[in-house]
Length: 254
Length: 215
Image 1 (spheres, rainbow over the protein chains, first blue to last red):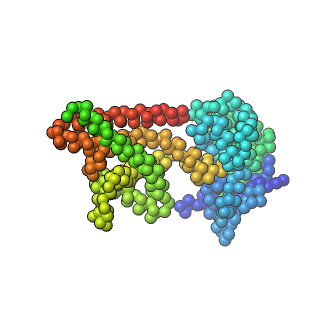
Image 2: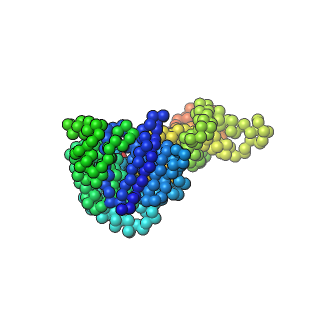
Image 3: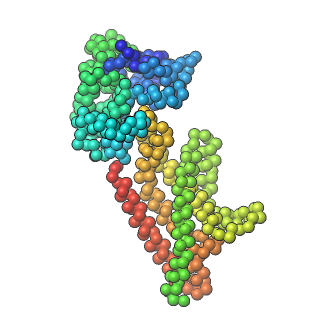
């Protein structure tokens, strides 16, 4: 299998407080990896480091063999901007609160990035955008503006926007946390469909049942370290570490 | 002097009033953006110097700045006072209004949610593309009401050009008022400004409506 993402010994502190303490992680092509853990465990920070929204203090960050950052004497040294720009082209990110562009129609939200950043032809991009909207069940919303859509619809548009860039990996940062409970299902369904199409995904989530059926690999984080990782059957159904057992008991009781 | 003659004479100066107004907007709108960007610079020296300049420009009377720009070069360097007063008047107005616009721009830019920058960055937009396509259009919508306020004030402030005897409408009105010992020219001037501002309000209202297609 082809390793798409490798994070080695990632360290990150905010104001002297260590948020990530030596995290290592690999993502293989076609894999669906879920990161679970209590809030404040560093999962979102890890995702932000992986997507270059945050810089690591130390460690390596390697996408498809290309170093975005390389550890030199305990300090993460980032590659020059053109390399980072190329690296950004290999992944997409779906935010917790969508972050659609409110002044653009749904169609323009999806079409502008590939046309502007990847210099692809309008006709070709439009064809793909229309197909993605259909896949998301939003064909009738192409000309709508984000404020006219429900949270679940906005999140599906943001997934389509990310997919239009043809990323090799798609990251999700708690994609259902900002949604009303009755709307989470439609997002989880979209992610399940993507998993069925062998899309490589890394998902930070609180939805344990969903993490169990959609992922091939589950990582449990606590206090900036990976406590346990493995198949969902191992980590979620038969955890071995006390911290994992406590966390799962607490979250499944709710 | 009949009312009609007064209106005609003052109307002749109205072109110069408009010149101050439009030229000031032409220069101060972009200059204000430059000042706002300097003010938000990560370089502490640049940002604090800019903050100081804005503070002086906003904290001293425009009338004083008008006098300083027009006669300052003469007193300081012995240079001739500009024959065409429009030049110093527009310079003073542009600099003064740029300071106000800069603070409005800054408020608008800083009110933008950080998620807009992050989404653009992840999608691969350059910083310039992010600013021009994602941030600026939304900032313009947000600041339009405050901008309308400033533009309305500018219309009325053009009357200050009388302090350096630039022959715009209000200066002429004041001269007529003095020579005729009449208050009527001031009423006429008031009417001119009021009608001008009705148009400004109408135009800005149209613009706001046009940007109302999203929230």
